[in-house]
View 1: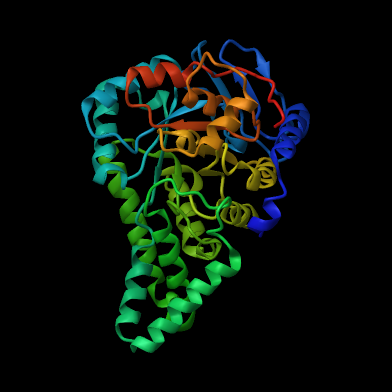
View 2: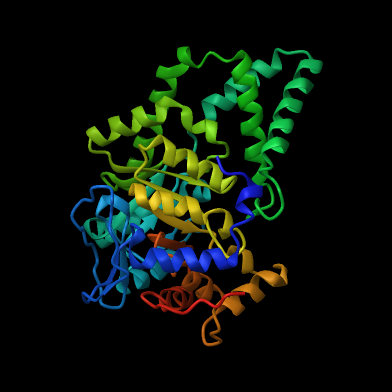
Length: 397
């Protein structure tokens, strides 16, 4: 697993070199405009499926989602903020522009986002024109419950010892090191701390084997709940875990077994995972395991150096990749000035918004399948989709 220290050596110059090299033949993500003009052709070592097009519009550029064959729009729709009808209206405009992938989760807006998607699909009849991804947001609830039950039966000195073990492991791996770890919301690291504590507690006291059937049953229930809420019939992509915080979480054989069962039952087509914490460590672990079809991770002007090598490996293996939190580091007036300064120095274009520029920057990397954006107004849709298919010369800074 790569460490934050080794990843620090991948600087801005390395990003430009690896991106340019990948664009001439070493990467997975082939892309094309809907009018048929190919861009950045690439060789796919993993056996790909035939190209599958949905909602193909001349105004949009598309890329293959790894070996799946899904040709996804370069900008895809995020739904973390979906809670009212006006946001569905905004998506209608995105659909007209060729957006063909919606990212969803039961945790978004307390389940409201899934219900809104269900309303949209029923009223529009566009299910077959869209790729829909969802997540098992509450996959780890049984593990957390087990941890708490164990901790409640332990003396205070033992609890302190276990917490220290977890904290020491976090420090040893340096996964919260500034410059490697970035906060995208205030309590983001809470899950990381809980996961490491869970790991050391269950390693010493847990008996996961006897809970296996209950864990798998609950995972199936959660997927069925999401299918009912959305009325999607099936999910093109299903993420589990939703927000993996520690590579060891991925060793749970329940994940691959449930994903395989869901595929055979026709409830999902492809499997993926998402991550905000220790993105390089977790992506490397997913690549090592080899059973995931895709991944979704924070990737932006602030954290990209640690991810470039892993992204290239994922592409070579045939994994699709959704870049999220792309514009987050430069969002708002309180964002550190160096981030926007870096972005503006790399892409010298004053005609587009900072958010559009962030997406334009990310899409210069051919190892990325698409960028997800929480577009909730017509203006956001117009701005963020305006940069698709565009190639720019990245300045070395």
